[in-house]
Amino acid sequence: MRRILVTGAASGIGAACCEVLTDHGWEVIGVDLGPAAGVRHLDVTDEAGWETLMADIGPVDGLVTSAGIRTRSAIVETSLDEWERHLRVNLTGTWLAIRAFLRAAAADQVDGTFEQGPPPHSRAIVTIASVNATIAVPDQAHYVASKGGIAALTRAAALEGAPLGVRVNAIAPGPIRTPMASERLQEPAQVAWLTGRVPLGRIGEPSEIGELAEFLLSDRASYVSGEIVYADGGWAANAV
Image 1 (cartoon, helix red, strand yellow):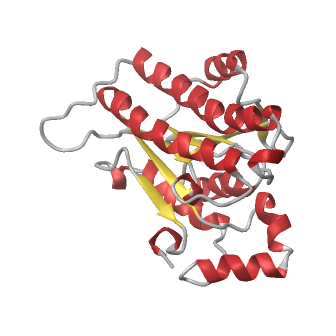
Image 2 (cartoon, rainbow, N blue to C red):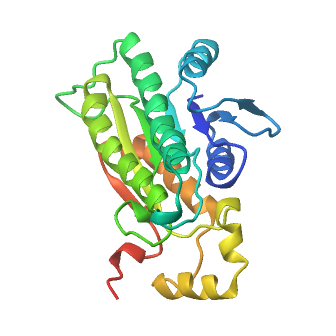
């Protein structure tokens, strides 16, 4: 059984990834800052915590970095602390996760070069970016910047992971029915704006992101790396 580590596993997209991956036969290790049944405690910004976790759980075949935060405020109203908190949790937390995973892969001396055909099993990382990594929205510059950083980090990590046999891709969700989005989804005007902006005309479900993550982690995506895959109902294609 292949093993997968999922951050932000207590709720939202992270919890959905855990459920979908379990259903597909993966052994899932979920971590989160908040408590949840079957989820280990981890602050993704804690460098020492990552070292302890990886030493404790042993080898893993895949990683999903779903831990993240988002608040809403205009640039002129956002404090430096709030700006830096988003970068630290969303971007630095993702970087620490990727670094820990690649260090473990390097220690195993995996050779990612194959002259003929795909490797028997490749390791893989899936980060969670956002449609807002490339399409900005007002009052969320701190969030937009952090998710844009994740997209860029994913591409760079794909280059460094390749010699180790590690593929790295990002999912860029559009509006998804998660606790993070619950406040907006309780406002009829916000729901109308969101569904009007999405060509498919609906809010996405966390399980849809989980299914895409499972595909990108699996050997079915063995030649896919360095990609930002939009799961946004067509949002990024809509220039109107």
